Length: 343
Ligand SMILES: [Zn+2]
Image (cartoon, rainbow, N blue to C red; front, side, top):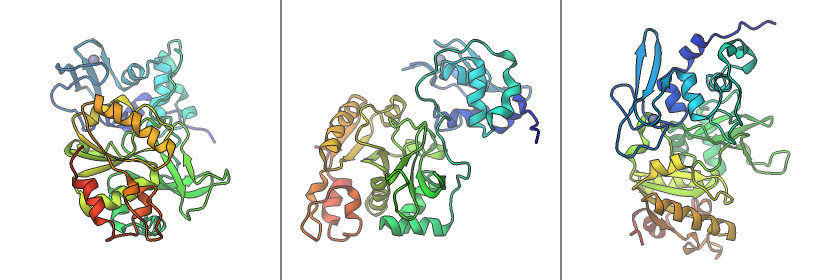
């Protein structure tokens, strides 16, 4: 079966510049009219970046320190410090085109540079990624013992999707940044590797999943609830639905993550971040370094000790997920999480 080679024009139709800027996480809204703070260089005060239509194409230009502009491919090449050839490869992946079909695009290739470690678009999201059915949402709600509407809200926020990973049907946490994704099986069982959680290949775990929402929604939130892992992210949505509609749950996917993505820190600048660490040495250690970076980014940080909550069997809570079946016994304590002072 022969493939019709995709032209660059077709790629640009599939993933035009405004959408590409969103997909790369460079903007969280479509920057169509006006000039903006350039996402490609450090720009504290100015607004040097604009996009515009020319003939049938989109172009961008930074009139500031970058002093360059161009098409979608030029943007990716700049963002990833790679050649035009490499950039076309990433562009075609982002646009959902298999690389071999896009081979014909490489006319203007220049020598390749050393590739960066992580690149958006490299994340191996399943080909059958979908929003899922009502039954899928109910399955996750039952599995995680949370309110159906918590799960439905995640789906609406683009933070929950479904697909086949390692041959198993999974629920997957992700967000608009597309930098990171984590899958768990629908039946709650482990994968063949023995792990219950599968981080999608190519994920940049320094990105807090759930942070970048569609339609510029993230910027409306003043409070963020930062938890560790996809299980606690679901639990955080459960409680946010009860107590804090103005509080957006986000999750770093592992205690081993020491550095928070600088673009994520930009989104969180000046905001109120409540952290619920998992109560183990790794979890508590991670929170120390997260807290420091968030404070440096101008955040007000409040840490909530889950061990304040006693489970019915007398144990102390270990993670937020332990608490979802305890309502209303834990309401008093959790109110402190959502409304408490910031000391
Ligand atoms: Zn610039």
